[in-house]
Image 1 (cartoon, rainbow, N blue to C red):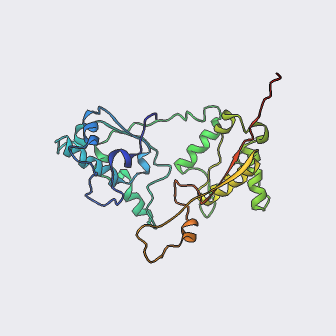
Image 2 (tube, rainbow, N blue to C red; image 1 turned 135 degrees about the horizontal axis):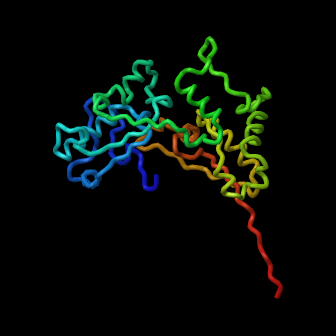
Image 3 (cartoon, rainbow, N blue to C red; image 1 turned 90 degrees about the vertical axis):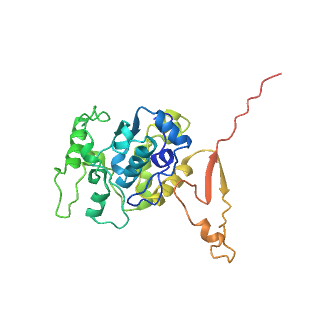
Length: 265
Protein backbone atom coordinates (compact mmCIF):
# COMPACT_ATOMS: atom_id res chain seq x y z
CA UNK A 1 0.00 0.00 0.00
CA UNK A 2 1.27 3.53 -0.71
CA UNK A 3 2.86 4.90 2.44
CA UNK A 4 2.71 1.50 4.15
CA UNK A 5 5.25 0.42 6.74
CA UNK A 6 6.28 -2.86 8.27
CA UNK A 7 4.65 -3.66 11.59
CA UNK A 8 7.97 -3.77 13.47
CA UNK A 9 8.94 -0.37 12.08
CA UNK A 10 5.61 1.37 12.66
CA UNK A 11 4.74 -0.03 16.08
CA UNK A 12 8.33 -0.32 17.41
CA UNK A 13 7.82 -4.01 18.16
CA UNK A 14 10.84 -5.48 19.99
CA UNK A 15 12.90 -8.02 18.09
CA UNK A 16 13.08 -10.29 21.13
CA UNK A 17 9.46 -11.35 21.42
CA UNK A 18 8.64 -12.79 24.80
CA UNK A 19 5.40 -13.22 26.70
CA UNK A 20 4.23 -9.99 28.30
CA UNK A 21 6.35 -7.67 26.13
CA UNK A 22 5.08 -4.27 24.99
CA UNK A 23 6.08 -2.03 22.09
CA UNK A 24 9.01 0.32 22.51
CA UNK A 25 7.23 3.66 22.02
CA UNK A 26 6.14 5.82 24.95
CA UNK A 27 2.94 7.78 25.61
CA UNK A 28 4.68 11.04 24.67
CA UNK A 29 6.24 9.77 21.43
CA UNK A 30 5.16 10.67 17.90
CA UNK A 31 4.13 7.07 17.27
CA UNK A 32 1.72 7.18 20.20
CA UNK A 33 0.27 10.47 18.96
CA UNK A 34 -0.23 9.02 15.47
CA UNK A 35 -1.95 5.90 16.83
CA UNK A 36 -4.31 8.01 18.95
CA UNK A 37 -5.32 9.94 15.83
CA UNK A 38 -5.83 6.82 13.71
CA UNK A 39 -9.38 5.64 13.15
CA UNK A 40 -8.39 2.36 11.46
CA UNK A 41 -5.25 0.18 11.59
CA UNK A 42 -4.59 -2.32 8.78
CA UNK A 43 -2.13 -5.16 9.41
CA UNK A 44 -1.57 -7.33 6.35
CA UNK A 45 -0.10 -10.86 6.44
CA UNK A 46 -0.83 -11.06 10.16
CA UNK A 47 -1.04 -14.86 9.85
CA UNK A 48 2.74 -14.91 9.35
CA UNK A 49 3.34 -12.86 12.49
CA UNK A 50 3.90 -14.34 15.92
CA UNK A 51 1.02 -13.70 18.26
CA UNK A 52 3.43 -12.15 20.78
CA UNK A 53 3.95 -9.21 18.38
CA UNK A 54 0.22 -8.58 18.07
CA UNK A 55 -0.25 -8.97 21.81
CA UNK A 56 2.56 -6.45 22.37
CA UNK A 57 0.67 -3.90 20.24
CA UNK A 58 -2.52 -4.70 22.15
CA UNK A 59 -0.87 -3.93 25.51
CA UNK A 60 0.66 -0.70 24.22
CA UNK A 61 -2.62 0.46 22.67
CA UNK A 62 -4.50 -0.17 25.90
CA UNK A 63 -1.87 1.84 27.72
CA UNK A 64 -1.75 4.93 25.47
CA UNK A 65 -5.55 4.99 25.01
CA UNK A 66 -6.05 4.48 28.76
CA UNK A 67 -8.62 1.76 28.05
CA UNK A 68 -7.21 -1.31 29.84
CA UNK A 69 -10.39 -3.36 29.39
CA UNK A 70 -10.84 -2.90 25.62
CA UNK A 71 -8.81 -4.79 22.98
CA UNK A 72 -6.30 -2.47 21.28
CA UNK A 73 -7.57 0.38 23.43
CA UNK A 74 -10.84 0.52 21.52
CA UNK A 75 -9.23 1.06 18.12
CA UNK A 76 -10.51 -0.84 15.08
CA UNK A 77 -7.80 -3.15 13.74
CA UNK A 78 -8.15 -5.18 10.54
CA UNK A 79 -5.85 -8.18 10.16
CA UNK A 80 -5.36 -9.75 6.73
CA UNK A 81 -3.83 -13.08 5.84
CA UNK A 82 -4.36 -16.74 5.04
CA UNK A 83 -3.51 -19.48 7.53
CA UNK A 84 -3.12 -21.89 4.62
CA UNK A 85 0.05 -20.09 3.60
CA UNK A 86 3.23 -19.52 5.60
CA UNK A 87 2.80 -19.63 9.38
CA UNK A 88 5.10 -17.86 11.87
CA UNK A 89 8.70 -19.05 11.74
CA UNK A 90 9.89 -20.74 14.92
CA UNK A 91 13.53 -21.79 14.76
CA UNK A 92 13.77 -25.55 15.12
CA UNK A 93 10.20 -25.49 16.42
CA UNK A 94 7.81 -28.40 16.40
CA UNK A 95 4.39 -28.29 14.80
CA UNK A 96 2.82 -27.55 18.18
CA UNK A 97 5.20 -24.66 18.82
CA UNK A 98 4.43 -23.15 15.42
CA UNK A 99 0.68 -23.37 16.05
CA UNK A 100 1.15 -21.88 19.52
CA UNK A 101 2.94 -18.90 17.94
CA UNK A 102 0.12 -18.19 15.46
CA UNK A 103 -2.59 -15.58 15.92
CA UNK A 104 -5.31 -18.17 16.38
CA UNK A 105 -3.67 -19.30 19.62
CA UNK A 106 -3.87 -15.81 21.10
CA UNK A 107 -6.47 -14.82 23.67
CA UNK A 108 -7.38 -11.96 21.32
CA UNK A 109 -8.66 -14.37 18.66
CA UNK A 110 -11.96 -15.08 20.39
CA UNK A 111 -12.83 -11.38 20.28
CA UNK A 112 -12.15 -11.04 16.54
CA UNK A 113 -14.72 -11.25 13.78
CA UNK A 114 -13.72 -13.37 10.80
CA UNK A 115 -14.58 -12.23 7.27
CA UNK A 116 -13.71 -14.73 4.54
CA UNK A 117 -12.71 -13.88 0.99
CA UNK A 118 -13.72 -16.70 -1.35
CA UNK A 119 -12.89 -15.35 -4.82
CA UNK A 120 -9.35 -15.58 -6.19
CA UNK A 121 -8.85 -12.18 -7.83
CA UNK A 122 -5.43 -13.08 -9.26
CA UNK A 123 -6.46 -16.27 -11.07
CA UNK A 124 -9.83 -15.34 -12.55
CA UNK A 125 -8.67 -16.18 -16.06
CA UNK A 126 -7.54 -19.70 -15.05
CA UNK A 127 -10.24 -21.42 -13.01
CA UNK A 128 -8.46 -24.79 -13.06
CA UNK A 129 -5.36 -23.32 -11.46
CA UNK A 130 -7.44 -21.41 -8.90
CA UNK A 131 -9.26 -24.61 -7.92
CA UNK A 132 -5.92 -26.42 -7.69
CA UNK A 133 -4.60 -23.79 -5.28
CA UNK A 134 -7.69 -24.15 -3.10
CA UNK A 135 -7.29 -27.93 -2.97
CA UNK A 136 -3.67 -27.56 -1.92
CA UNK A 137 -4.57 -24.99 0.72
CA UNK A 138 -7.47 -27.05 2.05
CA UNK A 139 -5.34 -30.20 2.19
CA UNK A 140 -7.61 -32.13 -0.17
CA UNK A 141 -5.14 -32.49 -3.06
CA UNK A 142 -3.92 -36.06 -3.56
CA UNK A 143 -0.47 -36.78 -2.08
CA UNK A 144 1.96 -39.69 -2.13
CA UNK A 145 3.09 -41.74 0.86
CA UNK A 146 5.56 -39.02 1.91
CA UNK A 147 2.94 -36.26 1.74
CA UNK A 148 4.31 -34.75 -1.49
CA UNK A 149 1.99 -33.13 -4.03
CA UNK A 150 2.48 -33.67 -7.74
CA UNK A 151 2.45 -30.40 -9.66
CA UNK A 152 0.54 -30.25 -12.96
CA UNK A 153 2.85 -30.72 -15.91
CA UNK A 154 1.63 -27.54 -17.62
CA UNK A 155 3.08 -25.36 -14.84
CA UNK A 156 6.44 -27.15 -14.65
CA UNK A 157 9.67 -26.72 -16.56
CA UNK A 158 11.28 -30.09 -17.23
CA UNK A 159 14.70 -30.70 -15.71
CA UNK A 160 17.78 -31.63 -17.73
CA UNK A 161 19.76 -32.88 -14.73
CA UNK A 162 22.30 -30.07 -15.07
CA UNK A 163 21.86 -27.22 -12.60
CA UNK A 164 23.36 -24.54 -14.83
CA UNK A 165 21.35 -25.66 -17.85
CA UNK A 166 18.17 -25.84 -15.76
CA UNK A 167 18.62 -22.25 -14.53
CA UNK A 168 19.14 -21.02 -18.09
CA UNK A 169 16.06 -22.96 -19.19
CA UNK A 170 14.02 -21.42 -16.37
CA UNK A 171 15.18 -17.92 -17.31
CA UNK A 172 14.22 -18.52 -20.95
CA UNK A 173 10.79 -19.72 -19.84
CA UNK A 174 10.06 -16.78 -17.54
CA UNK A 175 11.87 -14.13 -19.64
CA UNK A 176 11.40 -15.14 -23.28
CA UNK A 177 13.26 -12.99 -25.80
CA UNK A 178 15.08 -11.24 -22.96
CA UNK A 179 17.72 -9.76 -25.28
CA UNK A 180 15.05 -7.77 -27.17
CA UNK A 181 13.03 -6.66 -24.12
CA UNK A 182 15.56 -5.89 -21.40
CA UNK A 183 15.01 -2.14 -21.87
CA UNK A 184 11.23 -2.50 -21.62
CA UNK A 185 10.23 -1.69 -18.00
CA UNK A 186 6.79 -3.29 -18.35
CA UNK A 187 8.33 -6.52 -19.56
CA UNK A 188 10.86 -6.67 -16.72
CA UNK A 189 8.44 -5.77 -13.91
CA UNK A 190 5.62 -8.07 -15.02
CA UNK A 191 7.50 -11.32 -14.31
CA UNK A 192 9.77 -12.68 -11.59
CA UNK A 193 11.56 -15.81 -10.40
CA UNK A 194 11.05 -16.66 -6.72
CA UNK A 195 13.24 -18.90 -4.63
CA UNK A 196 13.24 -20.13 -1.04
CA UNK A 197 16.96 -19.54 -0.48
CA UNK A 198 18.99 -16.35 -0.85
CA UNK A 199 21.99 -18.14 -2.34
CA UNK A 200 19.77 -19.45 -5.16
CA UNK A 201 18.53 -15.91 -5.75
CA UNK A 202 22.11 -14.63 -5.99
CA UNK A 203 22.98 -17.38 -8.46
CA UNK A 204 19.99 -16.61 -10.69
CA UNK A 205 20.81 -12.90 -10.55
CA UNK A 206 24.33 -13.64 -11.78
CA UNK A 207 22.97 -15.59 -14.75
CA UNK A 208 20.58 -12.73 -15.54
CA UNK A 209 23.31 -10.09 -15.36
CA UNK A 210 25.50 -12.08 -17.74
CA UNK A 211 22.75 -11.82 -20.36
CA UNK A 212 22.33 -8.06 -20.02
CA UNK A 213 24.07 -5.87 -22.55
CA UNK A 214 26.47 -3.12 -21.57
CA UNK A 215 29.70 -2.66 -19.68
CA UNK A 216 30.10 -4.73 -16.54
CA UNK A 217 31.17 -2.94 -13.39
CA UNK A 218 31.95 -4.50 -10.02
CA UNK A 219 31.47 -2.59 -6.79
CA UNK A 220 33.10 -3.95 -3.63
CA UNK A 221 31.90 -3.34 -0.11
CA UNK A 222 34.19 -2.21 2.69
CA UNK A 223 33.37 -4.37 5.71
CA UNK A 224 34.62 -3.91 9.24
CA UNK A 225 33.49 -5.07 12.67
CA UNK A 226 32.88 -2.60 15.50
CA UNK A 227 34.33 -3.21 18.95
CA UNK A 228 36.71 -5.90 17.68
CA UNK A 229 40.15 -4.85 19.01
CA UNK A 230 41.56 -8.39 18.82
CA UNK A 231 40.59 -8.96 15.19
CA UNK A 232 38.33 -11.92 15.77
CA UNK A 233 36.33 -11.03 12.64
CA UNK A 234 38.74 -10.62 9.71
CA UNK A 235 37.63 -8.74 6.65
CA UNK A 236 37.70 -11.88 4.51
CA UNK A 237 35.15 -13.50 6.83
CA UNK A 238 32.89 -10.44 6.76
CA UNK A 239 33.07 -10.33 2.95
CA UNK A 240 31.61 -13.85 2.77
CA UNK A 241 28.50 -12.87 4.74
CA UNK A 242 25.34 -11.93 2.85
CA UNK A 243 22.84 -10.52 5.38
CA UNK A 244 19.23 -10.08 4.34
CA UNK A 245 18.56 -6.75 2.67
CA UNK A 246 22.22 -6.07 1.84
CA UNK A 247 23.97 -6.61 -1.51
CA UNK A 248 26.84 -9.11 -1.82
CA UNK A 249 30.44 -8.08 -1.23
CA UNK A 250 31.12 -8.01 -4.97
CA UNK A 251 28.12 -6.33 -6.61
CA UNK A 252 28.12 -6.80 -10.39
CA UNK A 253 26.13 -4.36 -12.50
CA UNK A 254 25.79 -3.74 -16.22
CA UNK A 255 26.00 -0.17 -17.43
CA UNK A 256 24.38 0.42 -20.81
CA UNK A 257 26.72 2.01 -23.32
CA UNK A 258 25.67 5.61 -24.07
CA UNK A 259 24.52 6.50 -27.59
CA UNK A 260 26.00 9.73 -28.94
CA UNK A 261 24.09 11.48 -31.69
CA UNK A 262 26.15 13.80 -33.92
CA UNK A 263 24.30 16.61 -35.68
CA UNK A 264 25.65 17.89 -39.00
CA UNK A 265 26.85 21.50 -38.85
